[in-house]
Length: 218
Image (cartoon, one colour):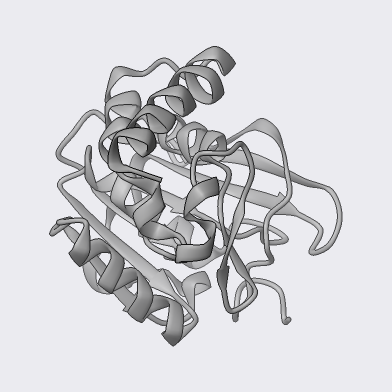
């Protein structure tokens, strides 16, 4: 596919898969329009980069459906200038989208091969405000905490306490929660200045499991 064809496919994706489903935040739409999703999938998958479903990226992992990336980003409520933590770098695409809005993104990836791939993809795409770290994502990345927002791209049995501790008061955490191979829901978790926790369910989803000390055992 030519560059013009891919650009047109990206525009259709934003219009039909994102805006038509109710995600209308201008910053999110602009971010999705600016990041070339084809740069974050294997070469064999590039003709399908803007289709309405996940795609394999190797190591048994996937790049999320574009709508889910958009919905997660919108649910974080970013306005610009934030420090964001992402759990599960994958190929780097969602981090690249977040980086169009946030000032600084830290992404933790459990699999070394994917962390290396994400760094290379981000560099080729000219994204300079994302740091990809290798480690147990269920433990977050305390060195850069607190975070204004946290996005988790794998499903756990509950929100890890380590991630809650690294979110600033008033911040937002979006994560799929549920069974390892069954029902899951994308949830937004917040804690107000008085310490009260609030959880909202956004939609039903199917994600790979969040593996680690405060997630699933594997």
